[in-house]
Image (tube, rainbow, N blue to C red; front, side, top):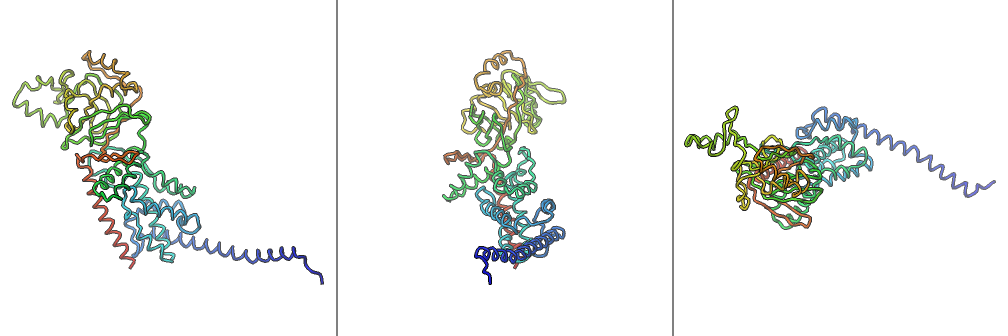
Length: 458
């Protein structure tokens, strides 16, 4: 009897093992595929039927979920293979740490997700999918644009809401296996936001709750502003009554400003200055005419002449250029819905006051001539001679800016720097207080909803 060589015996054994293993692999793949299809069917049924008695979907964004899962043919994205499970871990970690950005983690279905993650049923897996996707979409919008309803608390907030397709962006990130990049792209890219985030952790550790709440309010407002200010811009802080002109990350000019009184708040908005008006007229706003000028006129018919004012077409009042004009000698033309402007004033002594919340809402600039020079030349001094030569003519003249200048009017009551120091300012307009009160209501609503959801599973 011939003996089979040892190396052939080894090859034969390996071949037998491979043949035995092949049906098992195919069978397991078929089983996984079947489970995935069954799960897809459950997801479709839940979305189409509005949930179940154990999972009411009223609190979920059904429109976004249908769009998201419709693009996936209702296939699960967080369960199944290792990549999906790894993404689920990343998503859950982001939600659990959402408080580090001043968000409320109980907005993101963490209790519901934990219950369904521990339940080993197809129904629980489908519900887990929907809860996690909804939580991620909500978290992404909250962090990218701010929580719903907060910027509308005050009717004088005019930052445009930038379009953000949360469902489409999440879908692309998962398909490209770049969820980490998606998560990193959500917070405001401004360095000041990151400084506040570091400060939030510091003050929480110290148990300074009042400062914690102020920081949270300021982080929320940073989510409302445009994500980039550009290389060259002007920033006004209405809370501190200060102004900065910035060029390529360098503060070129700082100035005290006079902003609105608490009963005439300076609005929050972004716009672009397109020109300068030298020796401007002042078209007096109708409310000021009604409240302040008409009572004087009734007592003294010569009031308008003494103030260098005249009646204009349509029954308005215009103050002529010259000494005593409320706009001074220079005004920035920066179209905006609030008719709020940067301008000069004849009352320069007011800039020495500690509290400069004194105006009707417009922004009087202490170093208006230097700011005009910056707008014209990128330098606070290079354009001064030209501006002075036009002022002394006493004629009204408009100069278009070769490069329009973005202007941002903010409300910063907590200002942090890279070294961890934080400057806290008074909440003069009560914006922090109103925002935090609304957040407290949201938090209570979230807890009630969460408790109802947990009870329905018991």
